[in-house]
Length: 259
Image 1: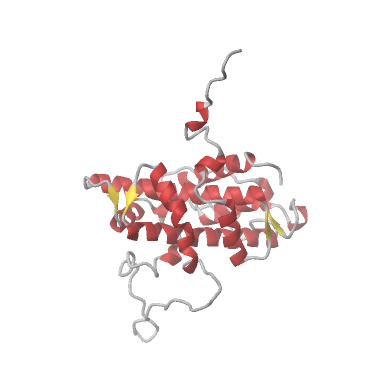
Image 2: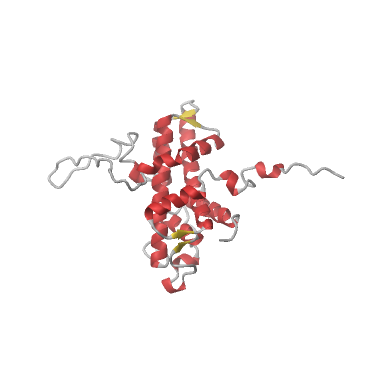
């Protein structure tokens, strides 16, 4: 009897299972969604949201690595994050984190009211209900796993910023997905697709995201995969990052068992 060879084909980034490549577990995704909406989140939707968040963080880390390499450094620092965002407008995500993080203080500008008086920065909320900022620590393990998968290391401050951006981005994605379910599709944003200068317009998105509320498939109290994809088009404007995020999210959802 011939011994079966080891299945090494699953070790590559393109053939690895969803469980292997996603540093953000569906349970974490659903916990974030519960902070935003009482709607049920399907399994395929959770995997799709985890995949989109992973794609976004991977792109940010890649940009930061290039910035560090330009200075002959291997360990990422917060300055590399700022450089990555400056070089690629698609990476300006999770903006609500910027007001909270020391990395971005002073970079977002000073706000003045109508009388010309400086508006003080908002203090941290004392609410017991978890928010995207308060709950950012939940992403630390996933961020560190993603850094390792990219062959990168980062100082604690950089990990903190990646935590915060991931938390805020996924929270905003959850809010937009819930809005898509309530309104029956992308109604406010579906007809406008901003693109970067010099780039061709991306192909039209899924037809399901623009159907009338009565034609929307799925339960009106359940966030499904297509709702996550529609929310992704709201969070990420037309460009390479959005197209890659959508493609990888579809693949991640297809690799899960039926809900």
